[in-house]
Structure formats: C-alpha cells, structure tokens
Image 1 (cartoon, rainbow, N blue to C red):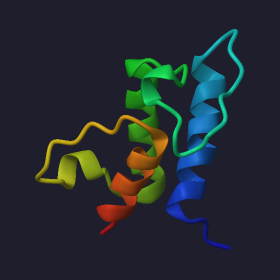
Image 2 (image 1 turned 135 degrees about the horizontal axis):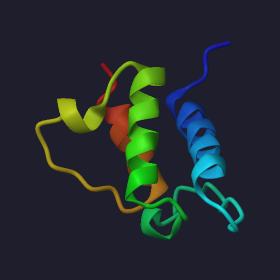
Image 3 (image 1 turned 120 degrees about the horizontal axis):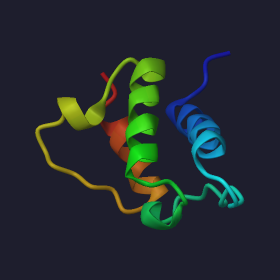
Image 4 (image 1 turned 90 degrees about the vertical axis):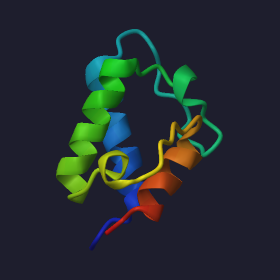
Length: 85
C-alpha cells in the first residue's frame, strides 16, 4: 500500500520529533499546528526536510521558484503536495 504525502510527512515528523526533542510530548499533528510551536528547532526541521527528500524523492523548497515559509503544518503539507513531481 502506498502512503500519501500527508501520511509520510506526519510519520516522519513523529520519528524526527521522538529523536530530537526531549521532555515534550508530541503535539497533535493537525493542519493548524504552528510550526514554531511544534517543539522542533531549526536543526530538527532541517533533518525533517532532508529525510522527506529521501523518502519522497524530492525537496519542494529547492525545486520551487517561490520563496515560501509555511507557518503551520497544513501549509507545510500543501507545499509538498503542490510541488510533487
């Protein structure tokens, strides 16, 4: 069964969060989750994007012509869905 982009992102986020964040519980991974309040720091997000590139086979931040900084998880997932090759 092929997972969709949303499932891959949320699964990967959960794994990275567990590896990178001590002392915090995983937040609810809703579209409204503010990324800056998710518990991941900039290094955690760099690891997340790198891991997603490996799993999905593309990095929308490097292939997109637009500069985009998603503020919540829904925008982050939509950006990946929009730029899927």
